[in-house]
Structures are given as structure tokens and as C-alpha cells.
Image (cartoon, rainbow, N blue to C red; front, side, top):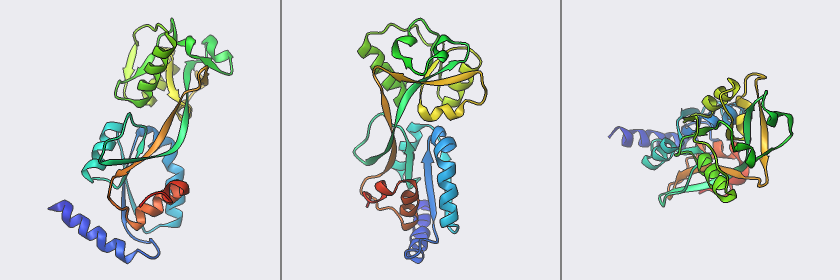
Length: 231
């Protein structure tokens, strides 16, 4: 009942702000990485253009992003996902190249690029198996026939993986955006090559549900190309 009343209130607000998109509430679920690295500048630009729109940002793990979009708790989600579901619509924002975060003392840090073979015989800090980046890493390792030691740590948050690498406890495969999480000179990021592997950063919405004018305005700031393809 509360959700129905909330939807009615927002629908009225959307009608009032239909022309200038000056009113409304947007609920966005985003991964911790997107919330820290991607969205601050987007939100700064959006607030400058649409100061009357309230943005609720839910920074949660990717599985919860999909659940919140599916339930209608949020208008849209931003993250990197393993696969789609029939009731969800996913649109690629951009591709993010994978690389290694390694302690500065590592021999890998002395090169401009890392090789997938560098993972062999190394202490690896892995993301949990629910991560799309973990799935890409495991698939590439299997494709190349590499033999890795079991991970010394498995973590859910990329910031934790980076902190462990900074402490000299291992190396980790992360997207290029995660390099911004390195807060000291004790670790560096090196792009992986041979092969170059990318993972899509994705906008997810509920299939068949039109975005409110305020939500469409947010998407237009996030990615004008994506906004033109949305209902």
C-alpha cells in the first residue's frame, strides 16, 4: 500500500515537472565502484541542471541492484552483471578493460602492461564468485590453460581487494576504473594484455516500465546515447 501511494505521489510530481523536469524523485541502485568513481561527477552535473530533483542513491552489491530494479524499489541500476533476466532491460554504458592491481615491489609493477600468465605462482586476491569480473577472470584463465593457486582472499568489495594489494598481500584482477581506488604509492595498476578482456558497465531498468521525466533527465546526463534508446 505504501508503495502504491508513493507511486501515485511521484506520478503527480512527474506530471507537474513534465515540461521542465524540475521536480521528482529518482531512485538509483549502483555498485560501490560506480557510486565512488562514476557517479559523483554525474550527480554534480545533474544537480547543477536539475536542482529540484531529489536523487536517492543505493550503493549495494550487484545482485541487490538487480533485485531492487526487479521489485520496483528503484528506477534504474548501474553496475556490471553476469546475465540478464527476461523482466530486466540492460544497456551498455561503456566497456572497462581488466588489469592487475599489484604491490609496487612486484616485478610486474616495473612493466607498462601485465600478462595473464603473471597470475601463475602469485598470491591472488579474488572477488567473490557472484561478481561478473570474477566470471570473466575465471573464463580467461581457463581459456588460456593457466594453473593458479587457490585465492589467498576472496572479497566482495573492490576497495577491500585494493587495500589488501597495497598491504602486499597479493595481486588482483580488477577493471580500469578500480585504479582510482588506490590511495597510496604502495600499489599500481597495470592493464592486462594477450588477450585484452573488457567487461561492460551497464544501465539496467525494468522491462516495459517507462522512465519518469526526471529519470530520463538523469540518464541523459549519464549517457545521451543511452537515453535516446530508452522508452
